[in-house]
Image (cartoon, rainbow, N blue to C red; front, side, top):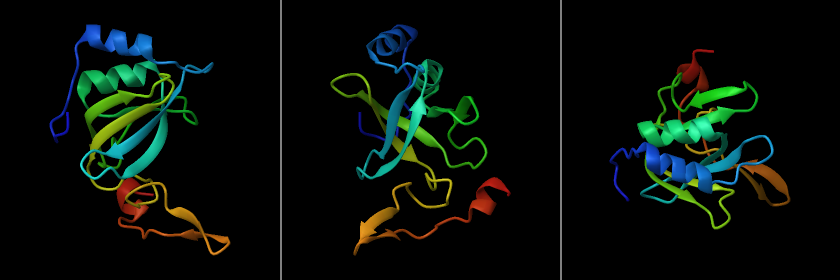
Length: 140
């Protein structure tokens, strides 16, 4: 699957996916979000079984917030949503790759992706500009 179409799955497919995922001792699995049409890595977050299930049922990406100890529906407060295009598991089932159609910016800092700190010339440099003021995204 490689289109902007939102993909949703049946309960039996979701059950099979959940059985194949190797969640860690805390019931979590790392999930990498990648822009489906460019290959750009957008972010990494955690998912639990409920977040995986909701993502596969709705086609809208949902993560698990370790700090808030609850589901985090990407974009519910900022409007910067991720629509699921393809759901992949690595060879061990212990890491997920979510190919998504990103609406707006992926990072809470207002940058397009979360990987904007790079080691350059023996120091850490910010290599991407803020595209959207976080105050505009979250009203803070």
